[in-house]
Length: 39
Image (cartoon, rainbow, N blue to C red; front, side, top):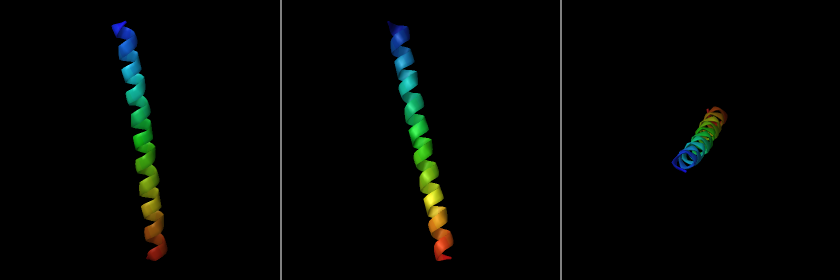
């Protein structure tokens, strides 16, 4: 039971980490693109 709970937590953290990285990369790419258009 504890092992299953541990796997669920790891899976959740992995998904959150992936979404966080995708969000940061999109935000960085958008700022870089925006900056190139203005300058």
